[in-house]
Image (cartoon, rainbow, N blue to C red; front, side, top):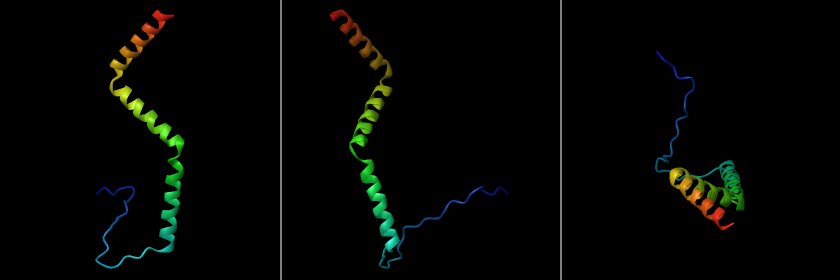
Length: 80
C-alpha cells in the first residue's frame, strides 16, 4: 500500500447554518494580508503588469513581431 508523503489539509467553508463570528486573530491576519496586497499594487505593479502584457502579446506573435521589428529597423536605417 502506498502512503502519501504528506497529507493535504481538509478545508471546509461550510458554516452549518450557524452565525459565524470571526476571531480577533483572523481579522488581524486578514488586515495584514490586505495591507500587503495594497502595498504590492503600487506604481511598479502597474509597470510589471504592462510588461507582462507586452511580453505575452509579443511571445504569442513571435514571427510577426520579428518581421515588424525588422521592417522598423530597415525603415530607420534607410532614413539615416
